[in-house]
Image 1 (cartoon, helix red, strand yellow):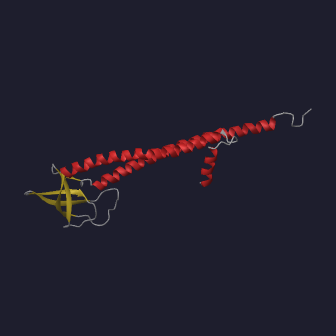
Image 2: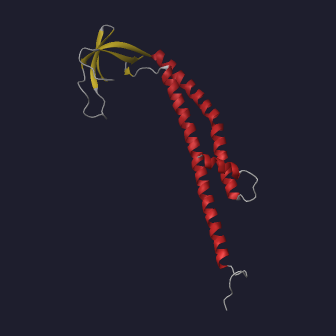
Image 3: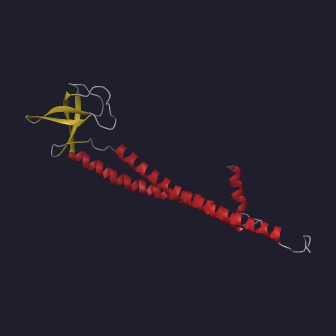
Length: 193
């Protein structure tokens, strides 16, 4: 790695023996590094906007959802046989003077009679727990990191493609020079009668 960096730094020097393709490759790598650093503030802006949107959702969900304590009527036992299908449990709670019973997805293995928190929206429909500020932060951070990583990956693929093209050009130039040196009758080889 250190040798590679040293080579790129030499390719950007003023040595007249350095090929134009070597300079172009070194400039391409330098551009990738520079753009990766420049992309950090853009990823930060994306993080801030996503965080603000998620915090708006957190505030909305905090106002529109409330929890009730329910009792498990029919619990889940043991590990599920199929990890793709969720484990359902039947819970029961009091809603005013009325007793409600619903089947919900169980977050863990629960037995009959255990207390369980159930989240309801303003209409009384069972829903998920509201997002927390830490969820908003993790979501925004994940989106920013993935966006920055994909941008850098795209730049690296571009630099690799440029290197491949330059390698082909260099190989053709070497082949052309070797042919000229081998088959050119410029007076240095023995003449055939």
